[in-house]
Image 1 (cartoon, helix red, strand yellow):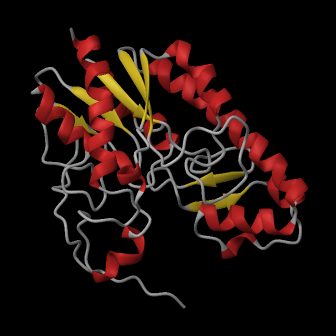
Image 2 (cartoon, helix red, strand yellow):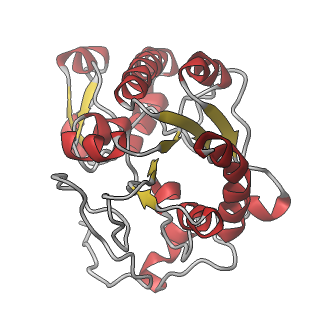
Length: 275
């Protein structure tokens, strides 16, 4: 049996809401009645355990309001199924869209929670037929479930990965269509996009390779990869803010150096688009 520890986080994220969205985003809340840059993404965009994540660094440098719509463990479903946040994101002068993994979204094999996209809800009949030996009620998280599928049958797992990749590409194209302003795609990871699909469940963003990104680039105004200097690649490194209950989660997080390098890479691209 597991127990949830309700400890206060060491860092105050000033949670806030925008528009009619029910999702809590990172604050302090920015006004939406003046021009702004919107940032959509997952844990890295949110800046978990990072006192000054890259959206705030960009704001400080450009002196241009930056609204952080990042959410820990977000998938594409969070944005596509939330008209409230899409409405305010669409009003941004420029949107930075972090490339998220393909596992945290509903598809023809399984469904995820509409707001906490890393939570597994249920398997479809198609997945139960593909893996009749599995009791899917034992899973609460997508990654745990996918790891079990891969362990049982790599061949059948390939069918699931192929579906996730197809669904991700279609949904990214749809999201880029709905964001009518200029969109900059951002790869935030400690490795370059692989040239071929990687099946490892330890290499985020899961199941995304360069061919998928290349298929999207004509639809975007720009593309930026996080620089991979040695200081940027250290996980759980100096500068992260966490308490003893958050220590294991913080060990997986890229530190402030990665955010600083990412902001530096984004700034000239954003300056050109805002000019």
